[in-house]
Image: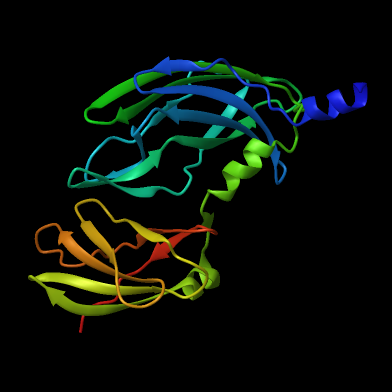
Amino acid sequence: MTLALAVAFSTIARASDWVAGPKSEARVVDGGLFDGARYALVQVRLAGAAVTYWRDPGEAGSPPTFDFAGSDNLGDAATIYPQPSRIDEGGSIAFGYQHEVVFPIRVTPIDAAKPVTLALSLDYAACDKICIPVHAQLSSVLDPQPQSPESALLADAMKNVPKPLDGEAAAKEASVAPAPPADGKAQWLVMINDGEARDLFVEPPAGFYFDVKPTVGKNAFLLSMIEHPTKRMRPEAPLRVTVAGPSPVEFDLVLPVKN
């Protein structure tokens, strides 16, 4: 019995208390190790139909902010965003999360032999019929040797994190070609070449905005350029593309010059 209890305890990550806010609650959890890196997890639960947002909130909303000032023995804390969903908020399309979201935080200590005291000032929006800003002050101590080195919560969260692709892998992931314009708007057809693409999210350079819709064919999406800076009819910098699905990925995509 003692051994069984010890094994059960080892699979449970240590967590702070839940901090309640309007339509939501949040806490920070010791995530353990994943691929040799140390993680904490920021867990946000949302009540009813409430929504919170991705790093790009879409047509409405505001992204969460993570401030780790005041932490001790912390060299760096990198927030990782899980793949979002497209949410209709009464005519406005938002990119974000419902019910629950877990943000992995990759933690780099200054001294790996000492604990990290993680102090997080978290601001996020909880939106139902109205949008309410929520603030949570969270803290946790991460031991150098985590009690749950392979936390199930961390493993599940990382399944929702898009895998970054670059170079040849990114080039093979998608093909893009100009499409006929509609209502005076330039368009491009993007085909995801492998796997199952549930949705496509585009983060363009500043001043540009794209509408994305699925179109005929598997893994096919039509990009319409809705806004652009004066005299700049096409972004010269790549778009950051997130492909949502069972195996999410993200990569840079260059739009070809229209013929």
